[in-house]
Image 1 (cartoon, rainbow, N blue to C red):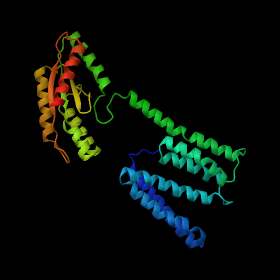
Image 2 (cartoon, rainbow, N blue to C red; image 1 turned 135 degrees about the horizontal axis):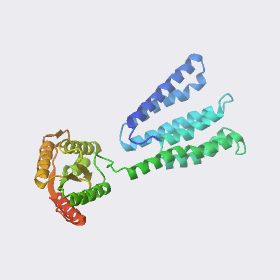
Image 3 (cartoon, helix red, strand yellow; image 1 turned 135 degrees about the vertical axis):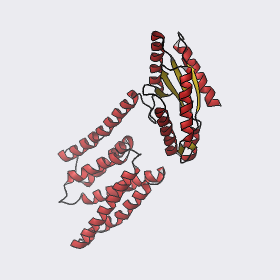
Image 4 (cartoon, rainbow, N blue to C red; image 1 turned 180 degrees about the horizontal axis):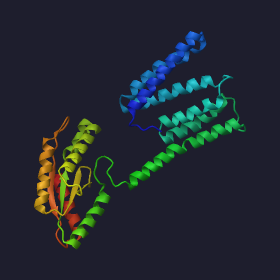
Length: 308
Protein backbone atom coordinates (compact mmCIF):
# COMPACT_ATOMS: atom_id res chain seq x y z
CA UNK A 1 0.00 0.00 0.00
CA UNK A 2 1.49 3.33 -1.06
CA UNK A 3 1.27 6.13 1.44
CA UNK A 4 -0.14 9.58 0.77
CA UNK A 5 3.28 11.20 1.10
CA UNK A 6 4.50 9.87 -2.27
CA UNK A 7 2.77 12.15 -4.79
CA UNK A 8 5.75 12.47 -7.13
CA UNK A 9 6.30 8.71 -7.24
CA UNK A 10 2.65 8.05 -8.05
CA UNK A 11 2.61 10.86 -10.61
CA UNK A 12 5.61 9.29 -12.35
CA UNK A 13 3.93 5.87 -12.33
CA UNK A 14 0.72 7.30 -13.76
CA UNK A 15 2.68 9.11 -16.47
CA UNK A 16 4.56 5.89 -17.26
CA UNK A 17 1.21 4.10 -17.61
CA UNK A 18 0.07 6.79 -20.04
CA UNK A 19 3.22 6.30 -22.14
CA UNK A 20 2.71 2.52 -22.18
CA UNK A 21 -0.92 2.88 -23.25
CA UNK A 22 0.07 5.29 -25.99
CA UNK A 23 2.70 2.81 -27.17
CA UNK A 24 0.11 0.05 -27.15
CA UNK A 25 -2.24 2.15 -29.28
CA UNK A 26 0.57 2.81 -31.76
CA UNK A 27 1.39 -0.91 -31.85
CA UNK A 28 -2.21 -1.83 -32.62
CA UNK A 29 -2.18 0.75 -35.41
CA UNK A 30 1.03 -0.64 -36.91
CA UNK A 31 -0.22 -4.22 -36.92
CA UNK A 32 -3.58 -3.18 -38.33
CA UNK A 33 -5.69 -4.21 -35.30
CA UNK A 34 -7.82 -1.06 -35.45
CA UNK A 35 -10.65 -2.41 -33.28
CA UNK A 36 -8.44 -2.39 -30.19
CA UNK A 37 -6.96 1.10 -30.57
CA UNK A 38 -9.82 3.03 -28.96
CA UNK A 39 -9.37 2.17 -25.26
CA UNK A 40 -5.59 2.70 -24.95
CA UNK A 41 -5.80 5.83 -27.07
CA UNK A 42 -8.60 7.16 -24.84
CA UNK A 43 -7.08 6.19 -21.49
CA UNK A 44 -3.55 7.46 -22.22
CA UNK A 45 -4.51 11.16 -21.87
CA UNK A 46 -6.69 10.28 -18.86
CA UNK A 47 -3.71 8.74 -17.06
CA UNK A 48 -1.60 11.76 -17.96
CA UNK A 49 -4.32 13.97 -16.47
CA UNK A 50 -4.31 11.79 -13.34
CA UNK A 51 -0.53 12.29 -13.05
CA UNK A 52 -0.99 16.06 -13.09
CA UNK A 53 -3.89 15.85 -10.62
CA UNK A 54 -1.73 13.81 -8.24
CA UNK A 55 0.63 16.78 -7.88
CA UNK A 56 -2.24 19.12 -6.98
CA UNK A 57 -4.34 19.54 -3.85
CA UNK A 58 -5.42 16.63 -1.64
CA UNK A 59 -8.91 16.50 -3.18
CA UNK A 60 -7.62 16.27 -6.75
CA UNK A 61 -4.96 13.77 -5.68
CA UNK A 62 -7.66 11.49 -4.28
CA UNK A 63 -9.68 11.80 -7.48
CA UNK A 64 -6.63 10.88 -9.55
CA UNK A 65 -6.40 7.51 -7.80
CA UNK A 66 -10.02 6.65 -8.59
CA UNK A 67 -9.52 7.80 -12.19
CA UNK A 68 -6.57 5.44 -12.58
CA UNK A 69 -8.50 2.58 -10.97
CA UNK A 70 -11.48 3.14 -13.28
CA UNK A 71 -9.26 3.09 -16.37
CA UNK A 72 -7.46 -0.03 -15.15
CA UNK A 73 -10.70 -1.84 -14.35
CA UNK A 74 -12.10 -1.12 -17.82
CA UNK A 75 -8.92 -2.30 -19.54
CA UNK A 76 -8.90 -5.52 -17.53
CA UNK A 77 -12.63 -6.09 -18.04
CA UNK A 78 -12.25 -5.86 -21.82
CA UNK A 79 -9.35 -8.33 -21.76
CA UNK A 80 -11.05 -11.03 -19.69
CA UNK A 81 -13.50 -12.41 -22.29
CA UNK A 82 -10.71 -13.22 -24.76
CA UNK A 83 -9.95 -16.92 -25.09
CA UNK A 84 -6.18 -16.47 -25.35
CA UNK A 85 -5.93 -14.36 -22.20
CA UNK A 86 -4.41 -15.90 -19.02
CA UNK A 87 -7.48 -15.40 -16.83
CA UNK A 88 -5.82 -15.82 -13.42
CA UNK A 89 -3.13 -13.26 -14.27
CA UNK A 90 -5.69 -10.60 -15.20
CA UNK A 91 -7.95 -11.46 -12.25
CA UNK A 92 -5.07 -10.95 -9.83
CA UNK A 93 -4.37 -7.40 -11.02
CA UNK A 94 -7.49 -5.57 -9.71
CA UNK A 95 -7.19 -6.50 -5.98
CA UNK A 96 -3.42 -5.92 -5.93
CA UNK A 97 -3.70 -2.58 -7.75
CA UNK A 98 -6.52 -1.48 -5.44
CA UNK A 99 -4.45 -2.29 -2.35
CA UNK A 100 -1.50 -0.35 -3.74
CA UNK A 101 -3.47 2.81 -4.44
CA UNK A 102 -6.10 2.95 -1.68
CA UNK A 103 -6.00 2.71 2.11
CA UNK A 104 -6.42 -0.78 3.49
CA UNK A 105 -10.05 -0.43 4.63
CA UNK A 106 -11.30 1.15 1.42
CA UNK A 107 -9.33 -1.28 -0.74
CA UNK A 108 -10.65 -4.34 1.10
CA UNK A 109 -14.25 -3.14 0.88
CA UNK A 110 -13.93 -2.34 -2.83
CA UNK A 111 -12.32 -5.72 -3.58
CA UNK A 112 -15.11 -7.57 -1.79
CA UNK A 113 -17.80 -5.60 -3.63
CA UNK A 114 -16.19 -6.13 -7.04
CA UNK A 115 -15.31 -9.82 -6.55
CA UNK A 116 -18.64 -11.17 -7.91
CA UNK A 117 -18.37 -8.85 -10.93
CA UNK A 118 -14.88 -10.08 -11.81
CA UNK A 119 -15.94 -13.71 -11.43
CA UNK A 120 -18.94 -13.08 -13.66
CA UNK A 121 -16.82 -11.39 -16.33
CA UNK A 122 -14.38 -14.28 -16.29
CA UNK A 123 -17.22 -16.84 -16.53
CA UNK A 124 -16.13 -18.46 -13.26
CA UNK A 125 -18.40 -20.01 -10.64
CA UNK A 126 -17.43 -20.40 -6.96
CA UNK A 127 -17.04 -24.22 -6.99
CA UNK A 128 -14.26 -23.99 -9.60
CA UNK A 129 -10.64 -23.95 -8.54
CA UNK A 130 -9.97 -20.66 -10.34
CA UNK A 131 -12.85 -18.95 -8.56
CA UNK A 132 -11.69 -20.24 -5.20
CA UNK A 133 -8.18 -19.08 -6.03
CA UNK A 134 -9.42 -15.58 -6.76
CA UNK A 135 -11.42 -15.43 -3.53
CA UNK A 136 -8.34 -16.60 -1.61
CA UNK A 137 -6.24 -13.94 -3.35
CA UNK A 138 -8.68 -11.18 -2.38
CA UNK A 139 -8.70 -12.39 1.23
CA UNK A 140 -4.93 -12.87 1.49
CA UNK A 141 -3.79 -9.80 -0.42
CA UNK A 142 -4.75 -7.56 2.49
CA UNK A 143 -2.51 -9.43 4.92
CA UNK A 144 0.70 -7.80 3.69
CA UNK A 145 -0.40 -4.14 4.08
CA UNK A 146 -2.08 -5.04 7.38
CA UNK A 147 1.19 -6.54 8.63
CA UNK A 148 3.12 -3.45 7.50
CA UNK A 149 0.65 -1.15 9.25
CA UNK A 150 0.76 -3.25 12.43
CA UNK A 151 4.56 -3.26 12.42
CA UNK A 152 4.63 0.51 11.85
CA UNK A 153 2.20 1.12 14.71
CA UNK A 154 4.28 -1.09 17.00
CA UNK A 155 7.44 0.77 15.99
CA UNK A 156 5.80 4.15 16.70
CA UNK A 157 4.61 2.94 20.09
CA UNK A 158 8.07 1.75 21.16
CA UNK A 159 10.23 4.40 19.47
CA UNK A 160 11.36 6.99 22.07
CA UNK A 161 12.00 9.64 19.40
CA UNK A 162 9.44 12.24 18.41
CA UNK A 163 7.79 11.67 15.03
CA UNK A 164 8.42 15.21 13.75
CA UNK A 165 11.90 16.10 15.00
CA UNK A 166 15.15 14.82 16.52
CA UNK A 167 13.94 14.93 20.13
CA UNK A 168 12.66 12.46 22.68
CA UNK A 169 8.97 11.99 23.32
CA UNK A 170 7.51 13.29 26.57
CA UNK A 171 7.30 9.93 28.39
CA UNK A 172 10.90 8.79 27.65
CA UNK A 173 12.14 12.29 28.47
CA UNK A 174 10.49 12.24 31.91
CA UNK A 175 11.93 8.79 32.60
CA UNK A 176 15.44 9.93 31.70
CA UNK A 177 15.02 13.15 33.68
CA UNK A 178 13.93 11.22 36.77
CA UNK A 179 16.91 8.87 36.49
CA UNK A 180 19.26 11.83 36.04
CA UNK A 181 17.79 13.52 39.12
CA UNK A 182 18.30 10.35 41.17
CA UNK A 183 21.85 10.05 39.82
CA UNK A 184 22.58 13.67 40.72
CA UNK A 185 21.40 13.10 44.30
CA UNK A 186 23.33 9.87 44.62
CA UNK A 187 26.64 11.19 43.24
CA UNK A 188 26.20 14.78 44.46
CA UNK A 189 26.30 16.09 40.88
CA UNK A 190 24.65 19.15 39.43
CA UNK A 191 21.71 19.02 37.06
CA UNK A 192 20.06 21.80 35.05
CA UNK A 193 17.21 21.83 32.57
CA UNK A 194 16.70 24.49 29.89
CA UNK A 195 13.05 25.09 29.05
CA UNK A 196 12.74 26.23 25.41
CA UNK A 197 9.58 27.45 23.69
CA UNK A 198 9.06 28.03 19.95
CA UNK A 199 6.35 30.71 19.60
CA UNK A 200 6.57 30.68 15.78
CA UNK A 201 5.71 26.99 15.38
CA UNK A 202 1.92 27.28 15.35
CA UNK A 203 2.03 30.33 13.10
CA UNK A 204 4.37 28.59 10.64
CA UNK A 205 2.00 25.65 10.28
CA UNK A 206 -1.15 27.77 9.90
CA UNK A 207 0.22 30.41 7.51
CA UNK A 208 2.87 28.57 5.48
CA UNK A 209 1.89 24.89 5.75
CA UNK A 210 3.47 21.70 7.01
CA UNK A 211 6.76 22.11 5.13
CA UNK A 212 7.52 25.42 6.86
CA UNK A 213 6.61 23.91 10.22
CA UNK A 214 8.91 20.94 9.60
CA UNK A 215 11.75 23.21 8.46
CA UNK A 216 11.41 25.26 11.66
CA UNK A 217 11.52 22.13 13.83
CA UNK A 218 14.55 20.77 11.96
CA UNK A 219 16.44 24.06 12.23
CA UNK A 220 15.66 24.32 15.95
CA UNK A 221 16.81 20.77 16.75
CA UNK A 222 19.93 21.21 14.64
CA UNK A 223 20.80 24.45 16.46
CA UNK A 224 20.32 22.84 19.88
CA UNK A 225 22.45 19.84 18.87
CA UNK A 226 25.28 22.05 17.61
CA UNK A 227 25.43 24.14 20.79
CA UNK A 228 24.98 21.43 23.42
CA UNK A 229 26.96 18.38 24.46
CA UNK A 230 26.49 14.89 23.10
CA UNK A 231 25.11 13.53 26.38
CA UNK A 232 22.60 16.36 26.85
CA UNK A 233 19.01 15.25 26.23
CA UNK A 234 16.54 17.25 24.15
CA UNK A 235 12.93 16.22 24.58
CA UNK A 236 9.60 17.53 23.35
CA UNK A 237 7.20 18.01 26.21
CA UNK A 238 4.51 19.84 24.22
CA UNK A 239 3.76 20.88 20.68
CA UNK A 240 6.10 23.89 20.84
CA UNK A 241 7.76 23.20 24.21
CA UNK A 242 11.11 21.46 24.69
CA UNK A 243 13.29 20.56 27.66
CA UNK A 244 17.06 20.28 27.34
CA UNK A 245 18.36 18.12 30.20
CA UNK A 246 22.00 18.92 31.00
CA UNK A 247 23.59 16.53 33.54
CA UNK A 248 26.63 17.82 35.44
CA UNK A 249 25.82 21.43 34.56
CA UNK A 250 25.38 24.33 36.96
CA UNK A 251 22.77 27.02 36.52
CA UNK A 252 25.38 29.48 35.18
CA UNK A 253 26.63 26.91 32.66
CA UNK A 254 23.07 26.19 31.55
CA UNK A 255 22.48 29.94 31.09
CA UNK A 256 25.49 30.14 28.77
CA UNK A 257 24.19 27.19 26.73
CA UNK A 258 20.74 28.77 26.49
CA UNK A 259 22.21 32.09 25.35
CA UNK A 260 24.31 30.38 22.68
CA UNK A 261 21.26 28.52 21.39
CA UNK A 262 19.12 31.67 21.28
CA UNK A 263 21.82 33.72 19.52
CA UNK A 264 22.50 31.00 16.94
CA UNK A 265 18.77 30.53 16.32
CA UNK A 266 18.21 34.25 15.74
CA UNK A 267 21.00 34.29 13.12
CA UNK A 268 19.63 31.23 11.27
CA UNK A 269 17.28 32.40 8.53
CA UNK A 270 14.41 30.37 7.13
CA UNK A 271 12.62 31.18 3.89
CA UNK A 272 9.18 31.71 5.42
CA UNK A 273 9.72 32.65 9.06
CA UNK A 274 13.09 34.42 8.94
CA UNK A 275 15.08 34.13 12.16
CA UNK A 276 14.06 31.56 14.78
CA UNK A 277 12.63 33.04 17.96
CA UNK A 278 13.21 31.02 21.13
CA UNK A 279 11.93 31.81 24.61
CA UNK A 280 14.06 30.14 27.25
CA UNK A 281 14.41 29.70 31.00
CA UNK A 282 16.59 27.59 33.31
CA UNK A 283 15.51 25.29 36.14
CA UNK A 284 18.27 23.74 38.26
CA UNK A 285 17.84 20.68 40.43
CA UNK A 286 18.34 21.27 44.15
CA UNK A 287 20.04 18.51 46.18
CA UNK A 288 17.47 16.25 47.80
CA UNK A 289 14.59 17.83 45.88
CA UNK A 290 11.83 15.30 45.06
CA UNK A 291 11.39 14.65 41.38
CA UNK A 292 7.71 15.63 41.46
CA UNK A 293 8.72 19.09 42.75
CA UNK A 294 11.27 19.50 39.96
CA UNK A 295 8.67 18.40 37.44
CA UNK A 296 6.14 20.86 38.87
CA UNK A 297 8.61 23.75 38.53
CA UNK A 298 9.46 22.76 34.97
CA UNK A 299 5.79 22.54 33.99
CA UNK A 300 5.09 25.91 35.60
CA UNK A 301 8.02 27.50 33.75
CA UNK A 302 6.89 25.93 30.46
CA UNK A 303 3.39 27.32 30.89
CA UNK A 304 4.74 30.77 31.75
CA UNK A 305 6.88 30.87 28.60
CA UNK A 306 3.95 29.74 26.46
CA UNK A 307 1.69 32.46 27.89
CA UNK A 308 4.19 35.28 27.29
